Length: 119
Ligand SMILES: Cn1cc(C(=O)NCCN)ccc1=O
Image (cartoon, rainbow, N blue to C red; front, side, top):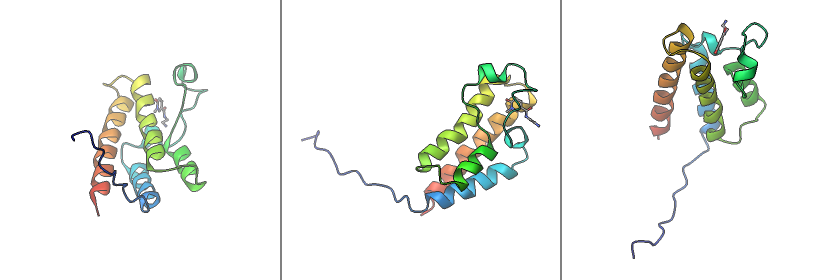
């Protein structure tokens, strides 16, 4: 009958840690990465602390990766997307930093789907 569950095929996650390292290295060296390399200074950026509840940046993601603080690929991707979501929340689309955020998100989406397609 149509409602019989088919066995879920688990994807092979053995290469995911290496994939996170490759992806993060590419993000860090992207020319539009400059707004995201270090935590936004909550002292010199008025309003940031109040508006952005969960700050995130590439150096913090690097630290977490080095200290094995990511359970899996999903939790890594969640943090990377947090960088871009914070950026969209705080910056006009039509601004230097706003555009950099959109570019970086587009690049990340493209790269992780390409890398996940590799056997
Ligand atoms: C992502 N983001 C970065 C900044 C910033 O000033 N970054 C330091 C650049 N040297 C300000 C607001 C913001 O949302």
